[in-house]
Image (spheres, rainbow, N blue to C red):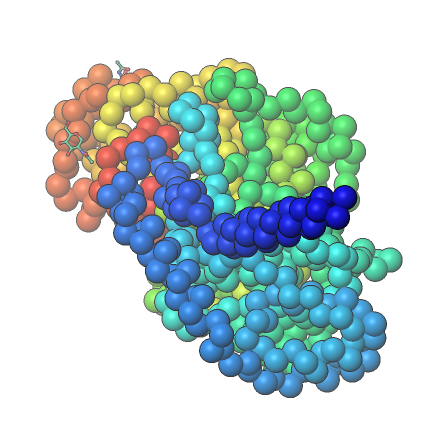
Length: 620
Ligand SMILES: *[C@@H]1O[C@H](CO)[C@@H](O)[C@H](O)[C@H]1NC(C)=O
Ligand SMILES: *[C@@H]1O[C@H](CO)[C@@H](O)[C@H](O)[C@H]1NC(C)=O
Ligand SMILES: *[C@@H]1O[C@H](CO)[C@@H](O)[C@H](O)[C@H]1NC(C)=O
Ligand SMILES: *[C@@H]1O[C@H](CO)[C@@H](O)[C@H](O)[C@H]1NC(C)=O
C-alpha cells in the first residue's frame, strides 16, 4: 500500500515532466513560423494575375526577401523606441470607459489615451515591400473565365475572432508623400483596409450608423474609403472621421482591387451565360430621384450628335433615371433645343481649365468633368462619355460605389463610364490639387486616376472600347462579332478614333487613314447607324456632315483609294486587308479631324492577348 502510493507519485511526476516537455515543444512549434507558411505566402505574392506568369525566376529572390524581412522585424522590435505625440485636444470630450482599437500605432506612446478607456492593439502581418500595386491592379484579368478565372492576392488582415467590439478606432496611416508613387503604396492601402474592416466588423456603431475613426497622418485618408465630408475635426496630423458604416461595409465587401470583377456578369464556366438581371430588377426598377445618367459637352459642338444618340440609346434601355447634360456656352441655342428634345435636362457650367495644359491645346478645358461632383442634389451618377452608345440596361451600376469603372491599361481605369458620388468637398479637393497632380495624358482620365487609385472593376463589356490592338484576324473576328450581335452582347460601345457621325454611313472612315485602322470596325459603325436611323428625323438632322467635313472625307477616300488601302472596302474581318502607310496624311488631315483632337497611340511591347487588346493606352 505504502509502496504503491510512492510509485504513483513517481508516475505522476514522470507524466508531469513529459507533459511539460511536450508543452514546450508545442509552444515552440506554434510560435516558430513553419517553412510551408513561407511557401504559401510567397505563392500568394507571386500568384499570376496575368495569363502568362512572368515572375517564375523571381520566386527564389522573393522568398528570400520575405525571410530576411521577418527576421529583421523580429530583431528590431525590442529596441523600438516609442514616439511621444500629443493626443488631439478634441479627444478631451470624446468620452471615457471606451474600448479603443489601435491600428499601426505600435511605435506610438499611447499611455495618454488610457484615461479614455481600454486600449487594444489590433495586429496583422505587414505586406512585404515587394508586394507591388500591380498585383492588386493587374492590367488584364480573365474576366470571361475562359482560363482559370481571376484571383486576388491576399492582403493580410487581423484575425477578427480575437477581438471584442470596439467603440473607437485609432489608426496611423503611412504616407510617403512626396515620394513618387506614394499614393499606390500597398502597405498604405493595407492599413486603410484594416481600419475600415475593424470599424465594419468590430465597431460599435452609433444610432446614426456611424463610428468614430481617429486618423493620424500627414496626408488625408484615401477618399475612396474615408470620404472627405466625413471629417468632423482636424488638428495638425490628427483627423476625426465619422464614416457612414453602410458605405464602408459595401466597400470592404468588394474585391480588394481590380484583380477581380466587382460585378460578375457571367456564371462560372460559360462565357455567354449572362448575369441574371431579373434578380436585381426589382431593386433597380423603382425610379429614384437622386440618381442620374450624365454627360458633359464643352468647348465645341463636335460631340452634340454623339450626346443626342447617347440619350436616345439610354431611353431605349427603358431606364427611368434622369438624364443630365452639363454644357457650356459653346453650344448654340438650336443645338440646346435638340439636346433637350433628345431627352437631356440641361445644366449650364463654367468650364474648368487644366492649369498645366498649353493655351489653346485640344485638352485645355478637359477638367470641366470635375463639375460632375457639384451635382449634390444627386447621390449617385453614372457618367458616360458622349462618344458612347448604350445597348443594354446598365441601371445596376447605381449599386456600386465611387470609383467603379472598366480597365484601360496598366492600373488605370477608363473614364468613359464611371460611377460618381457628387460631393462639394471632393470637388474642392479636385480643384485644389490641379496644380500639384500631373495627369499622364493631360486629360481628366489621368487626373482622376491619381485621385481614385483604389477602384472597382466593371466587365469590359460595360464600356467596350472600339479598337483593335493586335494585328490578328482572331481579335477582329471576336470583337466584330460582339459589336454586331443581336440581341446585343455588349452593354455599350465606346467609339474611339474618328466618330461615326463624322463618317459617311457606308463604312467606318477610320479605314481611310493608315494610323487609324486600329479603330476601324464596320460592324460597330453599322450598329451606330442603326440607332441613328431609329431616331426622329429632327434629331438626325443634328448629325449631318458639314460641307467642310465632306471635303475632308472625299479627300481621305481618294488618297486611301489610290494607295489601295480600301481594296475590298475593308469589311468584316477588316484587319486582313493590306495596311498601307499613307505618307503625309497626318499633316494634312489627321490632327484636324475631330475638333482639333489628336489621337495618340502607343505601341504595346508585350505579346498580344485578344482580351487585353482594348485596354491599351488610348486617349479618350
Ligand atoms: C454644395 O455647394 C452648393 C453651392 O456651392 C450648395 O448649393 C449645395 O447645397 C452644397 N451641397 C451640399 C450637400 O452641401
Ligand atoms: C479632352 O476633351 C475633348 C473634348 O471633350 C476630348 O475630345 C478629348 O478626348 C479629351 N482629351 C483627353 C486627353 O482626355
Ligand atoms: C501588322 O501587320 C503588318 C503586316 O502583316 C505589319 O507590317 C505591321 O507592322 C503590323 N503592325 C503591328 C502594330 O504589329
Ligand atoms: C466600297 O466603297 C465605295 C465607297 O467608297 C462604294 O462605292 C463601293 O460600292 C464599295 N464596294 C464594295 C464592294 O462594298
